[in-house]
Length: 112
Image (cartoon, rainbow, N blue to C red; front, side):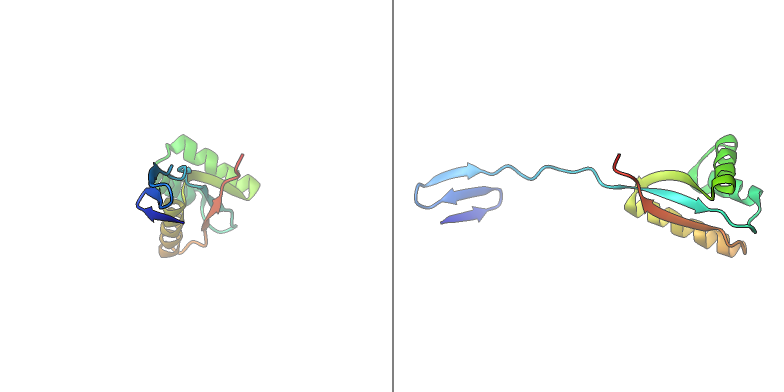
């Protein structure tokens, strides 16, 4: 029979105190914040939104906007889950406030 006390365990039969190794820490899973293309939101609004919420330069924001326009979606940034979901919610709220149907999602990154 063994008893656990904090990070140590004791073996009552032998009377030896052994320090157990804590579990290995794992990196948090990353999520990408993705903007989805629509036929109504002006390109300039998308560029300004990317600059504002993702701290991108005008040139980088324009490249992301063109990727969204041409490929249907584009990655604006990669973050931990809480930050990615918060940014997506902020972008969706901002878009609705400005009467644009632009959608933003947070999705898990590939493990590659």
